[in-house]
Length: 289
Image 1 (cartoon, rainbow, N blue to C red):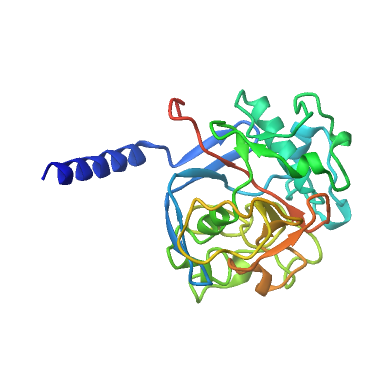
Image 2 (spheres, helix red, strand yellow; image 1 turned 135 degrees about the vertical axis):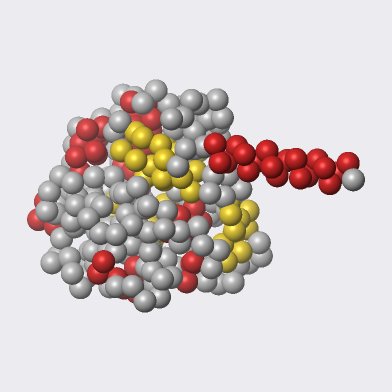
């Protein structure tokens, strides 16, 4: 009976703490980040993946204007964009993690990523490697950091699914099986060969825009086959050659927009179809609004 009481009390305490957390965080540089609850999702392979901690994910991909505001540069191909409110593109994975660290510093947070020999507070945009870099490939994470980072592939899938345990099979983020893809995403059929302003299509169930379409989004993981068995807070292989990205883009069809769709590129590769969005887990002592 004592153990049952402790278990029930713990569950009630967790429920209370979760209820008390805000539905969104506001960043002076990124705008809104939406709350994503912990939970378990069944992947398309049949493997189950559990996320044990709630997190906040950018309501939309990082825009060109937001990128310039932190980095002082915009590598986007303007011929493939309608303006500064479009997602930033032609972003390498190295540039994405640099932006995350610099944004953390700008907001007084602890940066997540550590690269040997690199002081991110002094690193100019032009010094981010444009070719394969051993030290950058050995990047490590500060577990206690409260700053911004890329989502893992599983975190991305869970958020894109709308926190639906069976949502990994959805044809696109926000799909209920009968709604129109064109209402939710910019893709090959409606993009006119360009990106478009973020948030102009309908969001998914968690209030996240452009999880499918507009630009592919870098995630943290090295690319590799997903292991069998039950995964808990899985963050990908420990080493690799390619980094994963998710979601499809303006230049791809519905097949690539599916939540289960996976693709990868070298972390130094840049293309007008690739951008990113960021995740944050506030510290337990933070006074969130």
